[in-house]
Image (tube, rainbow, N blue to C red):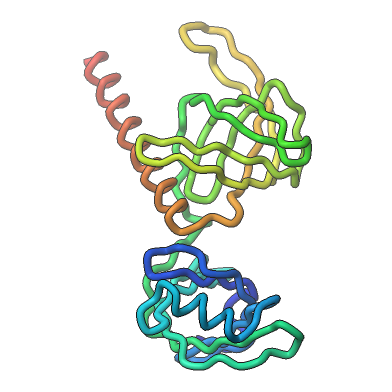
Length: 232
């Protein structure tokens, strides 16, 4: 890896994709990276790395502005004191690049106005109902008639799929008015929609969302086939 190739924020996971701790990129080279664990001690870092991991093997999630989210398999080979109190630097040898997730190219699929539940942290976790318009691995577009939400506001999306349930933090990036056709009617209506990006997704959560997107794609294909057969 070239110097300054990746963003500062790094996530360190166990091999089964459980978050160990967030870290900050200190230095990177062709075959290793150094990250800083803040508000911790050397003994605590050793405990974190040795508790569930054989030979200190981890998965590092690093983000590149062009390449997207990159997962690396790394092995801890040095721990030393950082530049601030309770800051510890950890050196990982990068053994293998596991995958790259290019968020900008994530496929969006229509959810056909699937009912969803939200919590609003800025409003004392007030519960609100909405409709999911579309979803990708990077975010959602939804409508929430009962609330007037704002750009940059955080919502908690209670994700439900046939295989997983969990809460996802999403930040509103845009607000747009969309005209849609009413079902079984020639009339149209205008709805206010909120486009969000997911934040702080864990790898297993992102995997579940991607599975759900594929599930919706398959459902859409079946609907199209049924519609085509009906008009034949």
